[in-house]
Length: 331
Image (tube, rainbow, N blue to C red; front, side, top):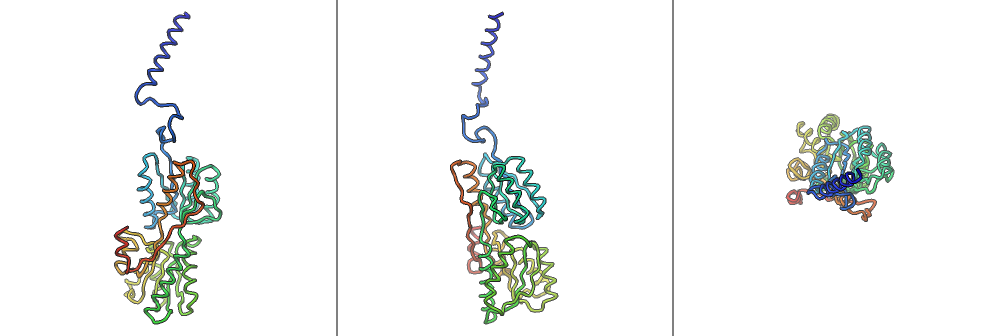
């Protein structure tokens, strides 16, 4: 009996050794670095505040393209549809999935602050993308200076009004983005700083269009019915500025005023092309911030010694008929 058991044990050992030598046999953990070496992909979740704006669609597309270059990364994008409660719920679900990296474009600052802290407390590296929250509950915040962009837009409007009227004066309609969102407030504050030096410049309407072209067209139609003299429309993003233009064109009043936007996206529908086409007098580039997010995120995922900065500020630029055509070629 003892001899039979010994033979059986030796046979079992031989089978085990043979199995371990087979091609494709799973290796013990610790023999290679990182989850990808073990056949497991790194999970990156991008919590997008909404997919309705062209800017957001461009972010999503670039996010997919850039993360798609990394074969060990799986990207998931969620759409909060401008709903704070929905975005919070989606992030809470993501936390339970334990992603290797979470990227959040917050819908609004205050509501998203606590849930992003939950992600950080769960040990998930978290990038805040171009919209801030009330507390620094993130690994890094990648942003653009919206107040500076608003100031640049305001200074352009002052200059353009002066060229057209011989003095810095005129009636301006301001089409506002989603109220309660920091970029909306900062783009407004920056422009108003520029206008404040010139009492002849007056805001004669400031409807809210939630960043959407269709809503901006409807709100501008209402303004046109109420305000007989308009010299300029300043949209907090390009789609709203274009929506205002379409409303004015329907009323036969588009030649009475000029239109200024923010975002400066490429492509046929983007703000840069609208400047080339003469629809917009100017736009101001609001960087997608995705390239920096992927750069920083990739280092976090693959370089354990990497220590990211708390904030990264992306530059903007003015787009006018003088440089729009050349810029469009690069986008």
